[in-house]
Length: 142
Image 1: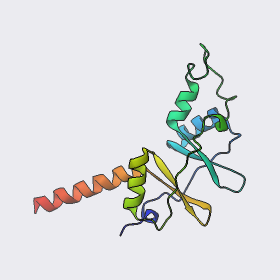
Image 2 (image 1 turned 90 degrees about the vertical axis):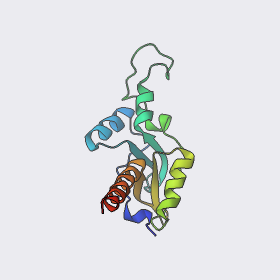
Image 3 (image 1 turned 45 degrees about the vertical axis):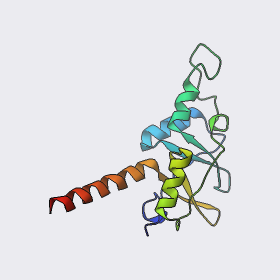
Image 4 (image 1 turned 135 degrees about the vertical axis):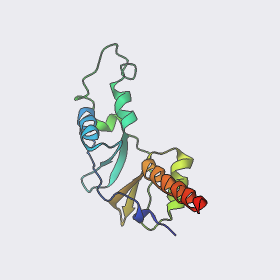
């Protein structure tokens, strides 16, 4: 059985609720990521901000204005999703994948003993799918 621990990223980039949308946008661009767990002072996830959330925050319709907003003034606590599902390192990969699919999540923070230890994303599953397809194609060639 393949577990979450085997494919999760152990390097998790996080921000705080008091950080601004502009900080998240720049960090996503710099680190080439699409999901940022928002953590409290104990490094416990209290929300998730996605690339889509950041783009929505910049949309003038969201704010009821007809001009570009200053995303340095919009805090992540205002745009983050508070509905979070988690995975555990020992969870079967299939279980995590089904959770992502069922809830249409782009990522799952990975928790162990109430600590954030990693993140697993839909992109990780695309990588696995490509690998499996390649294996099947190679087996067919023999």
